[in-house]
Amino acid sequence: MRSYRQYCQLARGLDVVGDRWVLLIVRELLPGPRRYGELLDGLPGIATNLLAERLRTMEANGLVTRDGDRYALTERGDGLRAVLRAIGQWAAPLMGPQEPDEVFRSHWIEYPMTARFPGEDRSRPDLTIEVRSGERPMTVHSADGRVRVEPGPAAAPDLVLTGPPDAAIGLLTHRLTLEEAKARGLAVTGDPRPLRRLRPNAAAAAAREGDRR
Amino acid sequence: MRSYRQYCQLARGLDVVGDRWVLLIVRELLPGPRRYGELLDGLPGIATNLLAERLRTMEANGLVTRDGDRYALTERGDGLRAVLRAIGQWAAPLMGPQEPDEVFRSHWIEYPMTARFPGEDRSRPDLTIEVRSGERPMTVHSADGRVRVEPGPAAAPDLVLTGPPDAAIGLLTHRLTLEEAKARGLAVTGDPRPLRRLRPNAAAAAAREGDRR
DNA sequence: CTGCATCCGGGCCGATACTG
DNA sequence: CAGTATCGGCCCGGATGCAG
Image (cartoon, rainbow over the protein chains, first blue to last red):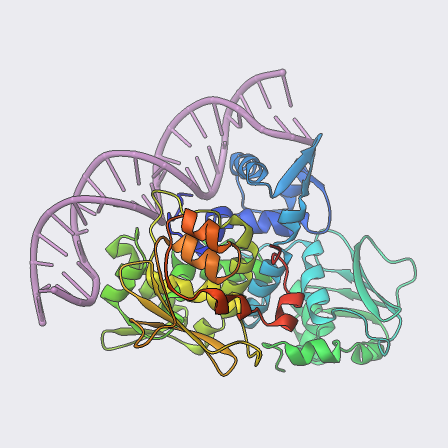
């Protein structure tokens, strides 16, 4: 993208991260280093030449390093986490049902979950949930008061959710009731009642907006 | 811009605010409603048709309302303030000297000032500074522990800074010494010593990053 | 004069084919 | 698997026209 050529902090920032796809590439790299093919898969819709070109300019801008065939965020690139969080938070009200033509990747549930259940809250129950919403299963762990999301199936899940992502995420984040989630096509195996005790960090939730319902 | 077509909070947010110029238009509207011509002037480099088209889609997306010939942010548009702050903060290390081809508008000093001196801090001295850095003078008020920026000259300034914006902003935010600022072409009228007692809000500064030097 | 609409050249984007 | 090459199309930017 062309530079805005304005002596302004926001404009200079957008000169670096305002290009199409750049922040989504950062999203894909936030959990850890990724290979080119993994990035391609996590960025449905991007053209391969665009990904290659973006990665090069991001490297030149100090956002990304490449180690062999692995790409990783620099410290500076990781600093964009706060920007992604701000945009994601602002965009929360835009998240209705999944549109028919919208793609979903299973590892994307990490953001809504950790955004909804940030930090440590000892009152959260220990809970293991397997979510089968995308190409492959994901496991949501609540343990020691922290909520974590990991790829792969769970060894002994307390709960298994199978169905469209909006239904699974809606139920997990308490934006949908069990009935509403089922009406959207979610299949639930196990006892869903402990989910209700999985509460957002109270202090963090109070400080946040877009949290209604 | 085309939609990313990804069922992801970040992607949906970027579908709305990822278009070129959109966040800069929000920047211009944050202080209050503006007319079309004022926006054009505050967005050097934008083509008039682009501004018109952006304003229309921003209106359709619920970011902007128009009242006669005035454009204003909706509550939703104003919610992007946190996003701009996040990007601006991340971009702080990018702010070296002004490039020769970079444009500056005097009202842009509001962001670096309020970002550097946020909230209330009773230990701040009362101070009125006139800054002559762009097309027209701006007045920085420190009173009752708060720092405010207003357009227009000051009636009885304690200090007048005249010169390039990087020098003026650098001195005001303590990123440059008096000598460095003068070396960059800043002329100082009045006693600059009280500036040193204009300190960032201690609590806010500690919570912030990118604050070194 | 303000607030756009139209037109046009160029560059970036997106899809596909192809290569080491 | 990890890109490069190519090409059509759309969006962007600049100039100009025009209506109230």
